[in-house]
View 1 (cartoon, rainbow, N blue to C red):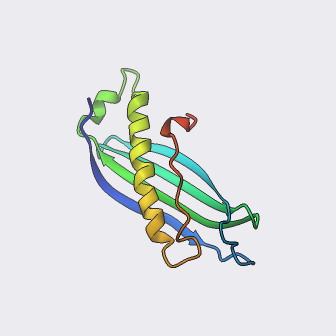
View 2: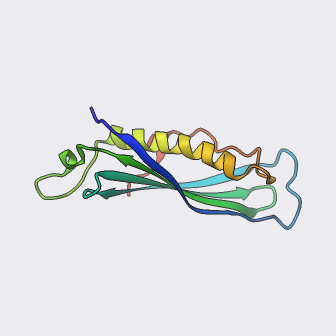
Length: 134
């Protein structure tokens, strides 16, 4: 059982690139998504950084990019530091943070792309367990 709370949500990077051609109606988009976890033991935080690159498949053009961080405060963060000083969260906790972060980013992306041709392009629901551990 882990007790945590959102500390903040930050937009680290955002861009919309107007394509050379008009985006076709019902175009297919591909989201390349990467998630990275960073830990700051002094501040009792885990930072989940989600990076998105959006490609219009029909035009074969990259049309958007966003990097968003979700920062979580965990008062008991030191409980996850081993005797040899390595930090490790249980896999189900990592999956939970990925899931919350992706859902949060979905709403942030929707807001960021409002007023652009990408306003109807919504990050698909993905299984947070599908992200490779590296």
